[in-house]
Length: 482
Image (cartoon, rainbow, N blue to C red; front, side, top):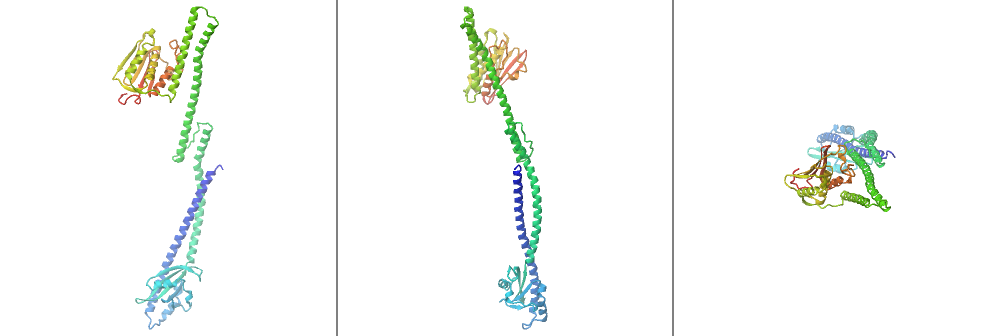
């Protein structure tokens, strides 16, 4: 059962060879027999024509219907000369002459002698093949005219069995059968070897498929062939690679979900603990002085605002990551969008006296997008720039065509942290960012992806940090130059 396909292929191949051999044998037998009979016919015709010519000379040399002495001697040796049975008959199938040593009668004439004689007296040499009841075998009859001048005076009939021909054909067929049998056996051995060679890569593909079914996505077929099996192996290897990538991505997403839950728990624990502690202190009247009570109220309000902001950010991030959540795409002016975001950013932290400068180059451009979400994205980047800028140091917004860059001067971002700044809950644990949820840049990244916008960041620690937003052709018009 392990080699069921191999056995089937070998049997099919052997059956095909056997049918081919039978067809070849039948065609060979028919063609060889016909060819041999044609040769025998030609030989008999040659003898008959020569003997008829000799007899015509004898007939032409008679006087008064009496034949010369040589004619009788010729008749006596006629069967030996012809090496076949010979009859000389007239148009009425009457024997004109016969070998006195071997007398013949009418009943010994070939079965279809009448048709042959009729054709002969029309002036043609003809052939006939049939079965002789006397000889109990297939026979060949040749008839040719005997002439006296221009007149046909008789018909010479040569009658010979073709049993020797059939024997020769049978011997040839026997030799062919032996040869074909040997070739068939050799072909079966070769076919078995070829079948096993053919099924070997299929076994490798099967083993790889079983490993994939068991969850081993590192399995590969290790088959390198430039044919249909090779194409199947490449497809299997491609599937294995994609399943391996999907498995790794699933593991990564599972870890991200675990980290997300852990981060949410951590972010919620602190404000909830502060609010609960403050309420317990107020309810137990641990705090009695009006000033302390007011401070506790302010602290609870501050923590509740943080919770509200965290929940809103989570809702925004969840909506943006949902493919079914639609954003309102419309024609908007990128210049107006940038100006609006800059005006709002100038009011973010008046206590730090940070000036938000705008530098616009080139003509304004129209883009398609959700004005509110794009404004939210720019404000998130501006809020980060203002938050991490030293007091009285400027934040610069560079707008050039389809590209917007937001730059600040400050401590910068460490090189090892730069690739992860757009991940959820990745935030700087510092005094400047004590109110941050760690979701702002993740939201900005999702907004950019929904608009097919490329957003990136670069930083020189201790000097400056720059976020660059580049609108794509799908977001902007085709006349934008990039």
